[in-house]
Amino acid sequence: MSILLNTASSHNRPASAASIGWFLGYFFTVMIGGALLGGFLIRLGLHGDGGLWQDFILEHGPARILRRFQTLCAVILAPWMLKKIGWGGITDLGWNSMQTRQERKRDFVQWFVLGCLGMIFVFSLALLSGVRNFNPFSFTVLISSLFSGFLITGIAVGFIEETLTRGVLYRSLAGVWTPWTAAIVSSLLFAWAHFMKATPESFEQGLGAIVWSSLFADFAKTAVPIKFFNMFAFGILLSRLVHHRGDIWAAVGLHAAAVGCIKMFSKMTEFDPAYGYRTWIGGHSSKFDDGWMLALVLVGLFCLTEWQYRNSLAPRSRVHL
Image (cartoon, rainbow, N blue to C red; front, side, top):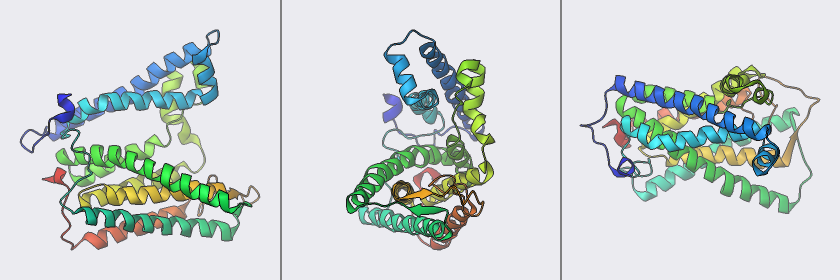
């Protein structure tokens, strides 16, 4: 418990080289150790004689369950590892800063609106070009999509992921490295996490195949370079928002808008197979994270962020003190 409650000061922060070692050890323990443990238990369930565990695996899919094992390992080991690289404890989540509550609320609303406008722009181009078509929907479906997409999924995912990825991980790394180094490393991991999915056949081939496929197999799909760049650019943008504002609320607003719009438009529209995939807009999924148009929006928002705060007196994050 002391790991969670004790705060770290600038006088006892670990050296940069030592923090790299701790971080790499944590990463490989979570990714490989979690895959080995999860893969072993999943294979036992798949080759068993039935029961609740086997039924659960077949219902939810072994790849999805394996990711849950890796996530569980990450959560369990995170307080110990983050303490090693300078995390300040449970009170150091990026929720507070030198800004007032009203300023934090303004940041959330401003970047939520900007995020919605950016996603509406991409989806409008997709509709006009024929990549996606509207499904017939009722007013009830519209309200349900708005409620579930934004209030439940969007804000929940934005808040949780930004607390863990930018509020804790990025800010902890930025305390011992430079802000840009921390942004690049945390954003690379953020992007990589979107590709971690083991193939179904790997669970029949053995633990080595499970580990390998969970880390690399998804990279063989179409348009991976574009999608990876977009996820990486999104992570950089969110990290810079946290750097400039000193807290996570602008990043939460932008992240929530992106997830909420994707959830809502995916229910209201459908992909037209006759159109096919185009690198400029993507189209294999409703996320449009495999097209260059989303990259253009992200670069535009990044330029806006840097221009807006270049000469401002906005407080810097306390992890840089």
